[in-house]
Amino acid sequence: MALTLEQKQQVVAEVSEVAANAYSAVAAEYHGIGVAKLTKLREQAREKGVVLKVVKNTLAKRAFEGTKFECMSDGLTGPLLLAFSMEDLGSAARVVYDFSKENPALETKLISVGGEVFGPQELERVSKLPTRDEALAILMATMKAPVTKLARTMKEVPGKFVRTVAAVKDAKEAA
Image 1 (cartoon, helix red, strand yellow):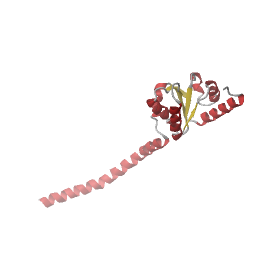
Image 2 (cartoon, rainbow, N blue to C red):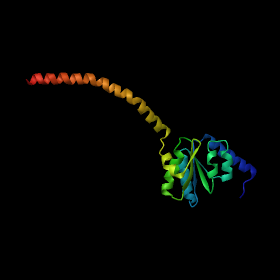
Image 3 (tube, rainbow, N blue to C red):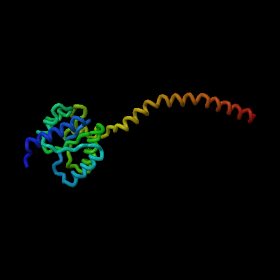
Image 4 (cartoon, helix red, strand yellow):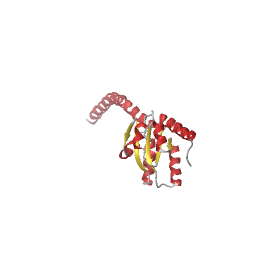
């Protein structure tokens, strides 16, 4: 059933709004995957804060105009599933990567991060990007390391002195 002009405008507006707020996007060809498996993929995506959209490529191209995903427009061919990361850079790539391990029919075509397009070979690398919480933990550990090392060094000076005095005491008692 063909979409009316109003329905097409609504789809373009909806996808454009999602694209404007997303951190990254993955376009994957879903041809050959059953409805039950796609439903499972949608559930996994919802849990991870990923928005999945299946729209006509011409509507997606219009929706991407003026967004950082406009660079994907040339590669939108065939039946594509668009996954948008709403929480962190790698969440859409993680969902697609994990699902494609079990279902090889889901074939990644494009990945867009920060206004740049990457090929399907970069899916694993993008999926391994840390989440926001992991990145903050890494940053805090890096910032804390010099202070911790200074405290250990400062504590070691009196500790070494005490051990030296104890060794002298033990040596005098043994003599």
